[in-house]
Image 1 (cartoon, rainbow, N blue to C red):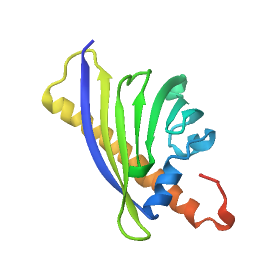
Image 2 (cartoon, helix red, strand yellow):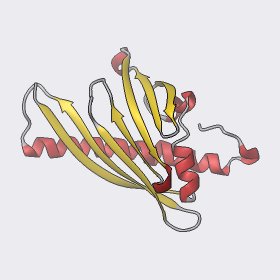
Image 3 (cartoon, rainbow, N blue to C red):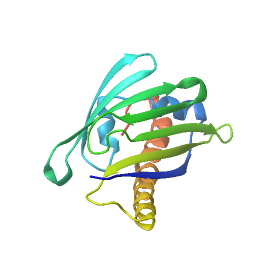
Image 4 (cartoon, one colour):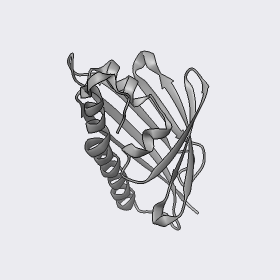
Length: 164
Protein backbone atom coordinates (compact mmCIF):
# COMPACT_ATOMS: atom_id res chain seq x y z
CA UNK A 1 0.00 0.00 0.00
CA UNK A 2 1.46 3.40 -0.90
CA UNK A 3 2.24 5.83 1.91
CA UNK A 4 1.30 9.45 1.37
CA UNK A 5 3.20 12.22 3.14
CA UNK A 6 0.92 15.10 4.15
CA UNK A 7 2.69 18.31 5.22
CA UNK A 8 0.79 21.17 6.75
CA UNK A 9 1.11 23.95 9.28
CA UNK A 10 -0.90 26.56 11.11
CA UNK A 11 -0.57 29.23 13.76
CA UNK A 12 -2.95 29.56 16.73
CA UNK A 13 -3.23 32.66 18.91
CA UNK A 14 -3.21 31.95 22.66
CA UNK A 15 -4.52 34.30 25.33
CA UNK A 16 -1.72 33.44 27.72
CA UNK A 17 1.89 34.35 28.37
CA UNK A 18 4.20 32.03 26.43
CA UNK A 19 5.64 30.32 29.53
CA UNK A 20 2.17 29.63 30.97
CA UNK A 21 0.90 28.37 27.60
CA UNK A 22 3.86 26.00 27.24
CA UNK A 23 3.45 24.71 30.80
CA UNK A 24 -0.27 24.03 30.26
CA UNK A 25 0.22 22.43 26.84
CA UNK A 26 2.88 20.03 28.11
CA UNK A 27 1.23 19.09 31.42
CA UNK A 28 0.00 15.82 29.94
CA UNK A 29 -2.35 13.69 32.03
CA UNK A 30 -5.19 11.17 31.91
CA UNK A 31 -7.86 13.90 32.01
CA UNK A 32 -6.65 15.39 28.70
CA UNK A 33 -9.16 13.26 26.78
CA UNK A 34 -11.95 15.59 27.90
CA UNK A 35 -10.36 18.38 25.85
CA UNK A 36 -10.84 16.70 22.48
CA UNK A 37 -13.92 16.59 20.28
CA UNK A 38 -13.52 12.83 19.85
CA UNK A 39 -13.93 10.59 22.92
CA UNK A 40 -10.39 9.86 24.06
CA UNK A 41 -8.87 7.89 26.92
CA UNK A 42 -5.24 8.76 27.67
CA UNK A 43 -2.49 7.17 29.69
CA UNK A 44 0.82 8.92 30.25
CA UNK A 45 4.14 7.27 31.09
CA UNK A 46 7.06 9.57 31.83
CA UNK A 47 10.29 7.98 30.62
CA UNK A 48 12.58 10.82 31.65
CA UNK A 49 12.46 14.53 32.37
CA UNK A 50 12.01 15.28 28.66
CA UNK A 51 10.49 12.09 27.22
CA UNK A 52 6.92 10.84 27.60
CA UNK A 53 4.93 8.03 26.02
CA UNK A 54 1.23 8.82 25.68
CA UNK A 55 -1.27 6.18 24.73
CA UNK A 56 -4.57 7.49 23.40
CA UNK A 57 -7.55 5.30 22.70
CA UNK A 58 -10.27 6.78 20.52
CA UNK A 59 -13.44 5.18 19.23
CA UNK A 60 -14.03 6.07 15.56
CA UNK A 61 -17.17 4.30 14.38
CA UNK A 62 -17.53 2.80 17.87
CA UNK A 63 -14.37 0.69 17.49
CA UNK A 64 -11.33 1.30 19.71
CA UNK A 65 -8.18 2.69 18.05
CA UNK A 66 -5.00 2.87 20.12
CA UNK A 67 -2.19 5.25 19.24
CA UNK A 68 1.08 5.51 21.15
CA UNK A 69 3.11 8.69 20.84
CA UNK A 70 6.62 9.56 21.93
CA UNK A 71 6.63 13.17 23.11
CA UNK A 72 9.96 14.96 23.48
CA UNK A 73 9.97 18.20 25.47
CA UNK A 74 12.25 21.15 24.73
CA UNK A 75 11.38 23.55 27.60
CA UNK A 76 14.18 26.04 26.88
CA UNK A 77 12.63 26.60 23.45
CA UNK A 78 9.01 26.20 24.64
CA UNK A 79 8.66 23.43 22.06
CA UNK A 80 7.80 19.75 21.87
CA UNK A 81 7.52 17.01 19.28
CA UNK A 82 5.08 14.14 19.06
CA UNK A 83 5.92 11.04 17.02
CA UNK A 84 3.37 8.27 16.38
CA UNK A 85 4.95 4.97 17.39
CA UNK A 86 2.12 2.84 16.03
CA UNK A 87 -1.47 3.04 14.87
CA UNK A 88 -2.83 4.17 11.52
CA UNK A 89 -0.38 7.08 11.21
CA UNK A 90 2.78 5.31 12.37
CA UNK A 91 5.87 7.46 11.89
CA UNK A 92 3.90 10.71 11.66
CA UNK A 93 5.51 13.65 13.46
CA UNK A 94 4.14 16.89 14.80
CA UNK A 95 6.12 19.91 15.96
CA UNK A 96 4.74 22.47 18.41
CA UNK A 97 6.42 25.72 19.36
CA UNK A 98 4.99 28.44 21.61
CA UNK A 99 6.20 31.98 20.89
CA UNK A 100 5.66 35.11 22.94
CA UNK A 101 3.43 37.69 21.30
CA UNK A 102 3.41 40.27 24.09
CA UNK A 103 3.42 39.99 27.89
CA UNK A 104 -0.03 38.35 28.09
CA UNK A 105 -0.33 36.62 24.75
CA UNK A 106 1.47 34.06 22.68
CA UNK A 107 0.91 31.84 19.70
CA UNK A 108 1.42 28.21 18.83
CA UNK A 109 3.26 27.37 15.63
CA UNK A 110 2.23 23.85 14.55
CA UNK A 111 3.89 21.79 11.81
CA UNK A 112 2.49 18.40 10.87
CA UNK A 113 3.97 15.57 8.85
CA UNK A 114 1.28 12.94 8.67
CA UNK A 115 1.92 9.62 6.97
CA UNK A 116 -1.12 7.79 5.65
CA UNK A 117 -1.30 4.39 3.99
CA UNK A 118 -3.61 4.61 1.00
CA UNK A 119 -5.02 1.91 -1.28
CA UNK A 120 -3.56 3.80 -4.27
CA UNK A 121 -1.12 6.59 -4.94
CA UNK A 122 -2.68 10.06 -4.86
CA UNK A 123 -2.17 12.84 -7.36
CA UNK A 124 -0.48 16.05 -6.18
CA UNK A 125 -3.87 17.76 -6.10
CA UNK A 126 -5.32 14.94 -3.96
CA UNK A 127 -2.35 15.10 -1.58
CA UNK A 128 -2.75 18.89 -1.29
CA UNK A 129 -6.50 18.51 -0.64
CA UNK A 130 -5.92 15.81 2.00
CA UNK A 131 -3.20 17.89 3.71
CA UNK A 132 -5.57 20.87 3.79
CA UNK A 133 -8.26 18.68 5.40
CA UNK A 134 -5.78 17.65 8.11
CA UNK A 135 -4.73 21.28 8.65
CA UNK A 136 -8.34 22.42 8.97
CA UNK A 137 -9.20 19.58 11.36
CA UNK A 138 -6.20 20.13 13.65
CA UNK A 139 -6.44 23.93 13.60
CA UNK A 140 -10.18 23.74 14.35
CA UNK A 141 -9.47 21.53 17.37
CA UNK A 142 -7.01 24.12 18.66
CA UNK A 143 -9.24 27.11 17.86
CA UNK A 144 -12.49 25.69 19.23
CA UNK A 145 -11.36 23.49 22.10
CA UNK A 146 -7.73 23.71 23.23
CA UNK A 147 -7.04 27.47 23.09
CA UNK A 148 -10.33 28.26 24.88
CA UNK A 149 -9.58 25.59 27.52
CA UNK A 150 -6.19 27.22 28.14
CA UNK A 151 -7.83 30.64 28.52
CA UNK A 152 -10.42 29.19 30.95
CA UNK A 153 -7.71 27.46 32.95
CA UNK A 154 -5.69 30.64 33.35
CA UNK A 155 -8.82 32.61 34.20
CA UNK A 156 -10.04 30.06 36.74
CA UNK A 157 -10.08 31.22 40.34
CA UNK A 158 -8.19 29.55 43.18
CA UNK A 159 -5.52 28.06 40.88
CA UNK A 160 -7.60 25.01 39.95
CA UNK A 161 -5.80 22.41 37.81
CA UNK A 162 -9.02 21.58 35.96
CA UNK A 163 -8.10 21.42 32.26
CA UNK A 164 -11.65 21.10 30.92
